[in-house]
Amino acid sequence: MTNASPTVPETLQMFRELECQRLPSVSEAESAFVEALGTCYANGEVRYASFHVAPHPVFDLLEERGRLVESGFMHHVWSLPAVAEVFRCAPREGALPYTRSAFGNLTALDLDGFLARTLHEGGAYESSAAPVARSLARACAGAMVDGRLDGANVFATNEPWCDFFYDVAWDVTLVTFVPETRCLRVLIATDTD
Image (tube, rainbow, N blue to C red; front, side, top):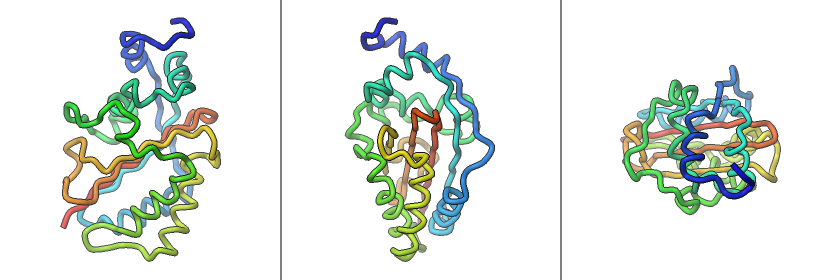
């Protein structure tokens, strides 16, 4: 590979080679948010985990150029062995488009608002008061991007892209990747009435 954009075969090969391992624990702030969301999504399920992504020249070039989504990252991340073991989700054909706009165009600066809104709006029967939701969301957002407001990748959607989701009204997918720490964090949640 040269410094040019990776080819499709190079990108597909990268996804087969990319090494990722689950981190043994998450922060107190992340745990508190996930627990609160689980209470709100009482009829559904919340899954959350953190991973370390090993360096890979193609992945790193795509990330540096802001091209992860267009490379199919949100489609292929679920097949990384460590991620697949936790989330057991396979995207439905065409359910995760390779466009940035499909994932909310969020930045690390928007993350606490997205999390607070998710918690405050709640699930089918439960929600969190706005001040509580905001406080938990701010702490969790900071942890999810390792305190880095610049350079963190944030991808979010409310689309029911796999069979995990109930496709009623409360489907959430949130993925963050921080290049400096190589930390990938993944949250999926769904609820029903």
